Amino acid sequence: MAHGGNIFEIQRKCNIHKDDLLDYSANINPLGLPDSLKTMILHSIEDLQHYPDIHYEELKMAIAEYYCVDKKDIFVGNGAAQIIFDTIHALNPKKTMILAPTFSEYERALKVCGSEIVKHALHEEEDFRVNIQELLEAMDKDIDLMILCNPNNPTSKLLKAEEIKKVLEQAVKKNIYLMIDEAFMDFVSEEESYSMMQSYREYENLVIVRAFTKFYGIPGLRLGFGLCSNEKLKEKISSGAIPWSINTFAAYFGKVLLAETNYVEKTHRWLENEKKRFVEKLKEIDGLKIFSPSVNFILVKILKPNVDVLQLQKKLLEKNILIRDCSNFSNLDKSFFRIAIKDETNNEKFAEALQEAMIK
Image 1 (cartoon, one colour):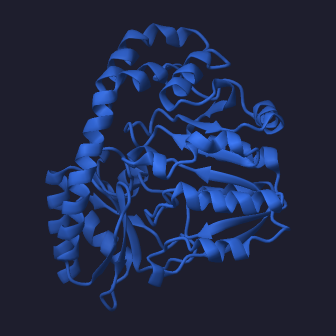
Image 2: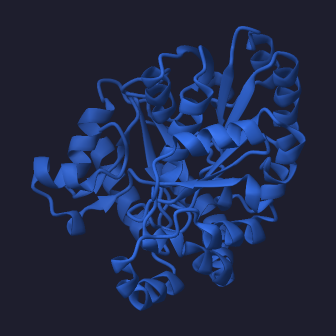
């Protein structure tokens, strides 16, 4: 699979009904849909007979209020993927640097526009953390664009805002745009120490990508937004974007965003407690290396000889459990997989199944 969460493909290929599948391949909030979203959809069902607001003013106002940013700097799209593709299309970079491993859609979008791709390898012996000094030294003046995923997917590692500012200073000197994908940043409890959201207006070469998909458990709704203070770039992105790119319910999501403070607090409490407990549980399983996560997903390496991720995936699918094969990520091989963090009950079930699969 090119991505996690493709439960329909598994349903077709393995004859496992999607409702019977315990999906650890997609990093979605296990708290499920916020109650206010369900209410909003039920009350707005008749609005499907009308076009959404093509400018999405109400949604942008809510995003601006929630994140304390300028409404005019916000552009919205059909998930973070559209924001990524639209931004890359507008920049049309000749040469781009990305991390390895990192989210695969950057490379796909870059290939569409014909950009040469330079991959900056992250090292397993450093737990796949970004070495800022190495990154700064690798920044070539011929590069037009650099893309950082923070927290990085699939490594679940964070860069501090102060580290990113060093990269931005170098990028300004060398006339490089920096796109930072913060799709999982809402899961970070001390977000202000890592996000560039509150400093974005200081840099005209910066684009921030955000998504509501993961945190609010709504991958089927498809909603993301971008943030940029560069007027010319915003205009170029806007002029190249598809009109009515998000649907009526996504356009009304601002009401949910401003209403769900309890949901946010509950999510942070769950993750703080369950992340530590689940990681310790996984470390008890022989033959695995667990890379400590910063957010709601974990990178794992199989150390057991003669066992690869395809074999492990097959064994777990026999128990109706799906993991994310990471062998298609650059700089990873068939010994790596990624799993989500869910609720304690499901995590216990998963850990037991994983232990049995590793013994066989």
